[in-house]
Length: 228
Figure (tube, rainbow, N blue to C red):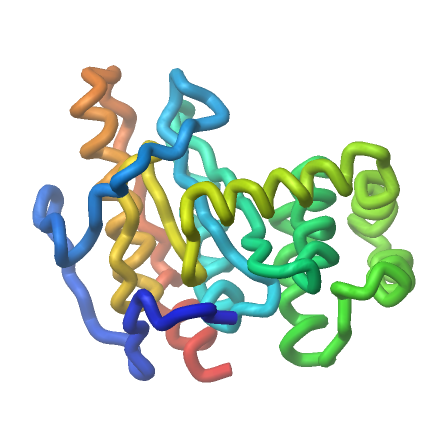
């Protein structure tokens, strides 16, 4: 779901070839007026503000998860669900449970599929619990986290983050707490993330990380998502 059209995402994916250091402020990324504190100050945070009801989030999610598997040890992925109104707290609770249970790589594809292909209203607690109970590989962990006393509090924190940093559209990708990716298409977005990670590492005089190969299937995955 997009609250406002902040990023113009192309209907057909463009072929974008970004050489190292080719990204430009104002075109590929913006400097945020207010820095977002990282969860781990000694590392490089890739933060995604997203929504399980956002089709663009559903399409970029597999690329971002695939990219995060190749992050160096000094880089990590953080995901926060946006909460623009009380009706979104149910989905924020799911996101908080996914984070707490460590099931992101298994759960996210299934959740997006349930929302967009099966029209499941997972924002409803009863519907979500019934759905999660059927997910053999991760459902038990997810339900335990969802039913924990900390879950509602974590969802409320997501609402506070949305309001404090004035998140108006999804997906919003922020690197190092200060650089927001300007999305033109999904493949370009994850490539800019990688470039910004290198930029932050250099700015902080951090030890160079080993180069990570770009997944060969990244373009195909993006095209598949765009045509769903």
